[in-house]
Image (cartoon, rainbow over all chains, first blue to last red; front, side):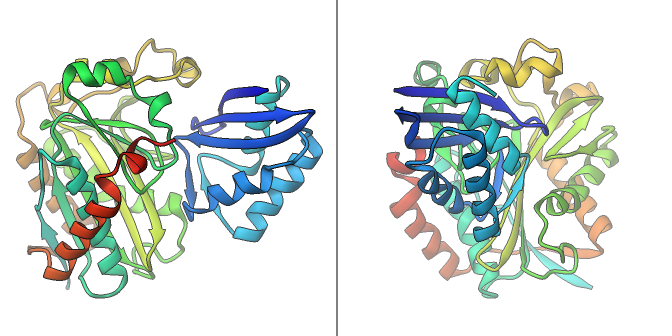
Length: 94
Length: 255
């Protein structure tokens, strides 16, 4: 099932999530928006890490936090919490 | 005194080549093959989207076709901007570890490397101030937006300044999601931006603004800015980036 959300982060930046969900699991996800993330190439890694993840807050939070720790990516206008909330909003709950 | 190179190289009818040059410079600065550089340039009738944005979501494709507006993706994050000949673009490329931006924090980069532009605009009489995350505003209205990156062993910052742009096209070619406008209590993108011309209440050219910003950079950063040209290797790299990246639909329009 296709799901989507447009989530406005605290700093005003937009996180737009388009994902495919099957039986509560993320099949694929595309995250776009006007935020900053350095290194830029790391966003693809986050999308890859989210594949097959359950659409549940606890698991998503662990995954996104792990992404920031592993890649040492620097977000500006967007945080780990914003990514999690944007994905949960696509599920239909925030 | 430290000397920075000033280049005015532009391809005003080829935004794809403009963005190829934009990437070639910090790459060469990072390799220590080119000096710290300030570049000024223009595009005609182009939307430049951020590297994380979806062209299909952000851009009104029909309006672009009708108005002959080109779409190009840059290599930095941030939001979509509309460029015409009344919009002045500037870019600063520093080697990583430069004294002005020692801590590699992107917010600090935006703040520090916007100071020269803010100073230049103030010298002209515009009450400009930096507004985090990446804007320069006048009384709450955006007159310039910046983006940047820390990569290729360099620190890169660029921005566009609305000098005397046609704001009526801006509202047509960009799709601004409702959620983005909600907390600003304004109905459209057109109403939350302003131009240098409107703030000064007189006609002003982009070259006058450019000269003021060069002065602002020299004052703020304690450097001398001297006219220069691109090196042969930079031009070669820009041509390669044009062929392999910026002229391709896959780069510019997908996802």
